[in-house]
Image (tube, rainbow, N blue to C red; front, side):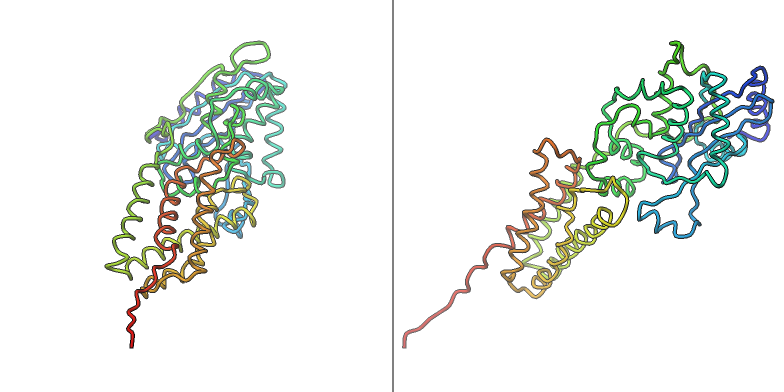
Length: 398
C-alpha cells in the first residue's frame, strides 16, 4: 500500500513531469479489477496534467450512486445513470491503493492543440448539468467514453486502427472471464444475455473492457507513424490476484447435475413419491420463475443484451403450469391427459433450443444451459407423458 509520503512522492513526480510542457499532457489511467462484484471489470479514466504545474485531474466516467432515487428500479429497467466526475489525482487514486488494485498510467502523444481541446471538453463535460449519461455496460461505459474522447482528440486514429481487427472475443466471453471469481454473477450474466452478447468483436468494440483499451493503445501509432504511448508509470502496485485468462467451464458440472436430477427422480418416484414430487415441483418452479424474469428482461426493459434470449425455451414460464402435475405425483395419481400434453410441449420447446444450434444465423452461446435443462425435461416427458397403463380388471361369468 502507498502511504502518505508515497503519495506525495508520486504527486511530485507527476508535477515535475509536466512542468516543462506548455500544454496539458494527456494520459490513460487504468485500474485493475477489484474484489467487489461491481469492480470486477476494471476501470479507465483520463488524466489531464495542466501546464501550470498544478495537481493533475482525473476525469472518471464511472461514478454511480446506490442512494439515487429509484436506483434499483432504473437498473432493472435498463435506464442506468452514470456520470463523469473530475477529481484531483491523489484523491481519486487513494482508494485503489488502499484496496490493492493495480493502477497504470500511459502517457499519450497528443498534439498540443488537441490536448488543449480535450482538456476543455472534459472540464465542460464534468459540469453537473452535463455530467450524466445513460450507461450501457457493453456499448457506453467508463471505458468506451474514454476511448471515444481520445479518438476525437486523435482525429479518429483509434477507430481507424482498431475497427477492422479482432481477437475473436465477444461481450459474453469477456464478461464471463472477468466475473468468474464471483460465480453467482457469472451465472446470472450468462443466463440473461441473449445473442447480442455473442457477436464477434473488433478491437475497437472489445475496448469496452478497460484493460483491453489499455493494451490496444500500447500498439497504436500516431498520424506520423510514431508510438502513441510515449511513457508508462505504475501509480499503484497490484496486490490482488490477476484477472482470469478465460471464462469458467461449467458444462460437465451442469451435465452431472442433470444426470443426478434424473436419477434422483427415477429412484424416488416409486419409493418416496412425495419427495419425488417436491424435487420435480421445485425444478419446474425454478424454471418458470427464472423464465418470468427473462421474459421481463426481454419485453419490459431496455437491456438490449437480453433481447431474443433462447434460454426462454429452456427456462420456460409455461413450466409453472406443471405444478399440478407435481401435486398428482404427491398423491400418487397418474397424470391427466392435458398435463401429459403440456409436459410434452415444454420438452419439445427445450429441444428446439438445441435445434437452433444448427442454424447458422443463430449465434447464442447457451450450450451449457441446454446440457443442464434438456436432459431433465426430455427424461421427465418420457417417464410421465406416456399414456398410463390400463389397470387390470378381473371378470367372472355368472
